[in-house]
Image (tube, rainbow, N blue to C red; front, side):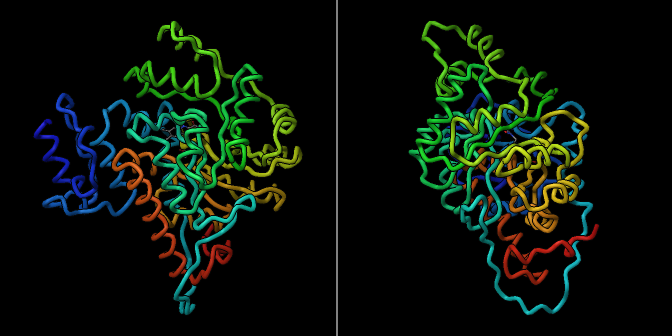
Length: 402
Ligand SMILES: Cc1cc2nc3c(=O)[nH]c(=O)nc-3n(C[C@H](O)[C@H](O)[C@H](O)COP(=O)(O)O)c2cc1C
């Protein structure tokens, strides 16, 4: 083991997180501690300090992961204008809590698409999780179940729907990237339905162009890519070379979809359908008009077309356009429980987090994801108590200034 790296981890408190030591490989140089790292982590004398917020987990992930994998999770498209704006837009919103409300206890439970959950924070679909921790998406699925919330499982999570279902009986949605071969897509949706997934999320936003990934030549390793394609249901013979698989993967997915895709999905599954990637009120209206059950207001965490607005800034106009005819969720930029509070006050039923739990997974597997959810829950509870909200329904519009 690289002694410098190990002592850096200890000094940062990662030892107390139980970071699995087989990932601390001797041939890797340590990552730099990001500027502005939390004092709670920096002063972790004797490895006693614990991460106290999502940013601490980001730092632990940076230390634990190979740089290209950390960059894949963390960076956004091109100039990262939208990535920064997602966080800045939440920070611009001001809370305005009433005083002396006498509230001593709060209930964070709610329902999403009739599914009761213990907190209004879901795990967003995140690809490639087996690269972040040996237990990958299985660990995330278990953490979501333990927190009594929903995991949105990416088609590219790194495990088959059957493996995820076997790992956790908690509520799960399946996020579909559409294979061009609709027979493969149909079988995949049927497998998700059969293994107990509760909804299908179709992700439709485009325009990914991540400079860091290009610079790092980031790509799935051969065995991971082979498993991924087979998990989807593509016929990938053993003799197919890495280069052939990469070429196959490049053309396997449908990036030219239209609204008709939802009619087709409706014809093959009884599960509720959600659209992910909505930023325009007129698109939200179309989603309602074709009878979709849920709308995820999202810019993919700034990983797709750069320059689009923060999803939180688009939420009010979308809530108005939908007018209660579908459930609205939001992701992109949630880093604090107060962000969850703000999104709910502005009309979201619940939020999803992406990077925060990917960092938690990288830092400490299932325990890391659980801890991220717990920290956000605690921050949400604090905001609810301070604002006199006994329950999620009490998080009203006038608690956020506009
Ligand atoms: C590493 C990574 C991989 C992602 N993979 C997917 C994916 O496979 N499917 C999808 O719909 N969204 C994917 N997303 C986007 C998330 O679902 C979500 O929209 C976004 O992360 C929310 O922003 P946040 O990271 O600021 O929380 C991914 C996000 C990250 C960080």
